[in-house]
Image (tube, rainbow, N blue to C red):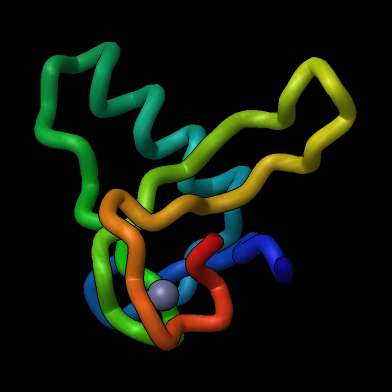
Length: 72
Ligand SMILES: [Zn+2]
């Protein structure tokens, strides 16, 4: 299953590293988390850091999106 490493934020494309920084900044300043959306299906996605088991940083859909190739 492909893992998304970029998403849409407003009308921009942001990479996973930028998204993690934005989310971290939002938490630090108690701001709303930016609304990251899947480039393919436009559903909300959440950035995940690199895992301890070697899984690369990626975006996951908040709710499963049938028909989207980026949704696990
Ligand atoms: Zn999607």
